Image 1 (tube, protein in one colour):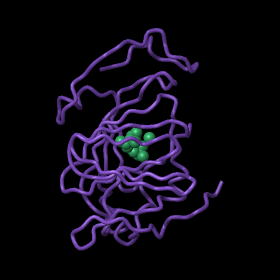
Image 2 (cartoon, protein in one colour):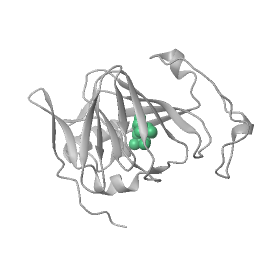
Image 3 (cartoon, helix red, strand yellow):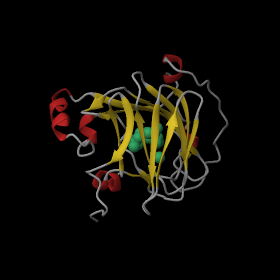
Image 4 (cartoon, protein in one colour):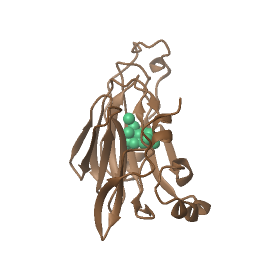
Length: 208
Ligand code: M6P
Ligand code: ZN
């Protein structure tokens, strides 16, 4: 599905040509065919984020695909909702599960909502004030990332983790804060269990 040119807007207002639409949400090729953009993120996009840097270096030559985002193109204005599907593939770097880069929204006072379609995982969230929460993803479960909470999706299962997401069109992405600081917690496999541990790579300050 392609956006109509009448829906493009750069002046911050909802375009007058913004029309209702509908689509089926399922897992598989039928769903993915309907998306406008497809972003692939490989291991190299997560440089500095995994605890075990030796394991990272061993995997880097093959630069495995970690996750994919299929998005519906919408105008990036306050009245619109950007939405799509993220697929996080199963795997680990050392003991640490595959995960998204994670980000704050550039406009901090904007939320994001998720609906898990397939697989198992966690949405790891934290605030700049020091609070953190990890909510579980399992099929049929909704997770709400409140305004001002950074968010990172993690696949703790053996199959793809597939989630639908939606967030305000004007939210924007602040990746730099997480690239520099990381998340407070890391999600690792320990004796066959999923565990959260303090991230030794986390730093309290962000160089600006
Ligand atoms: C989640 C959502 C999306 C995001 C995607 C990839 O599904 O938060 O908005 O684009 O993960 O994560 P990131 O943008 O941090 O690479
Ligand atoms: Zn977001």
